[in-house]
Image (cartoon, rainbow, N blue to C red):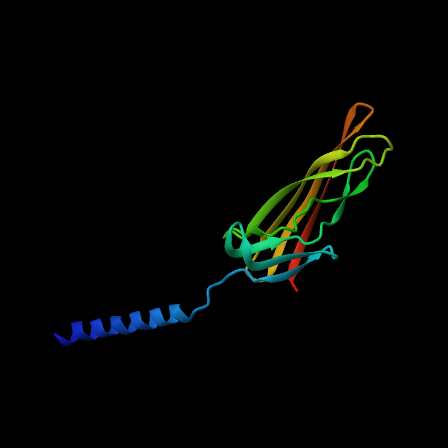
Length: 159
């Protein structure tokens, strides 16, 4: 009878040691850093360990602002705002940033067009991501506000 509790205690100790050793050597799943190529092609998103938001952490940036079609009375290509400055990636893996945009009106003598742009990306731990870029502008023509907007969704894969 006394041997049974001793065997149980030793067995539990062995299991605990094996479990803690396996936990110490297991690699935690995290987002893969590097350059992600976007589809539609031509642009990239970077995810790297860097200093952003005042501390060393995962940071994401869109180094080059793409042009997307702003749909309104006339379909015009519009460059999204500047998202080249790295921002912190939350533990959820998803970040959305907004930036103001201004562009010269294609109509001579009309005031500059102003609006907002957005960049959103969600990373997965398998080295892929998805998201969108969008613009929303308002042009003043003859005292009337004429809006246009556009949105392009993308998928991305670690290069």
